[in-house]
Length: 494
Image (cartoon, rainbow, N blue to C red; front, top):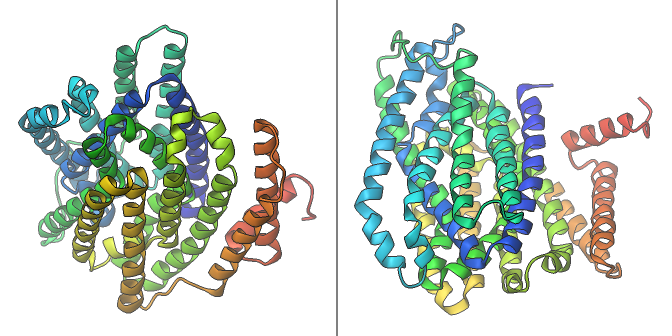
């Protein structure tokens, strides 16, 4: 099993386990335990801290992946690369804390009327920004040394388990909401601290190592990749979070809470692609570094098909069970039903794009990627400003859909023309027909009580997808996984 497959399997396991815990935390416990205002507060703090932190990395997380091959050495000193990371980290922390104290007053005054809870708790942004910043930088380094699944474990699973325990403390009245926020901050900071300690323990973070034996133009490359990576990263994370901030601004914090839960349901579609994108980034970067376009093409085309299948399966699971989801959530969250559908559809488009971001970002066209993302962010902001006052939560969701549609079409055409790589096959259309057919069949099932309905409906959808993938041989990778599972269950001869 190759490094991508091995790390993808481990990363996917952590992602799915983490998603299960996140489902329990974000989509079940928080809406029940907290008011929509409190849910909105947590998610708006996350949105703001994510955007500021991504900008404050100064693009070094992209330097990690794109330029680490120039520094990499067998002795793990990596020609002083850890020192470079440390310099960027200190600079980023200084910039982000300066930003906070410069704009703190504006954040408070602009939210005092519609989001007073945010104004009262604005200081939580400091630890959240620093924790997000350090995680992003360390995660890029973990991906460069092919330990992406380890960083996934700490952020996607370990941190969410800590948050779950905090929610239990709140549920049993052992802490109040303010103390929960304090606990939440500790949980949020913990992955970065543990990851840093882990790197030191395995000897991969040797700060005393000096820069040596580097190509003469390396620092110009570092500056260029960092600058354009910073723009790309900031715009990408802003596209994922800007709507929550704008909803709190144009509507209120309660609406932001409802939308955040709806949005999170939509992001479940992205789970199959998370590990693949993290792990494939370094491989695509090496492929371009070694002028091995066939390697890039193989990874891009195969991942595109597998991610599309995974995205559609989860979309059908989600929408076939939407009535069950609304049964679980408090009544006020029913307002987000069609926002869930639109956002989930947008993220199916994102899965269809596959590794297009990585292909452009780690090729010679990486500068263009920054301008593409700036354009998409502008489209998202303008469409949100127009649509939120007119359509509310569905308007924000529609703005996201429009943005991802334009993103998918532009990058697909660009990669096709620039690198002559075209990932779409007849299988994509056939997979879509299978998904529509399975969803139509799910509508024929009678509605039962909550738990039996979810189990029977979901099991039926899963079995039909497995049969369709295996019988029509839609994916070699997925067929191999299915066959291996059948062998373990003694349902298929070796």
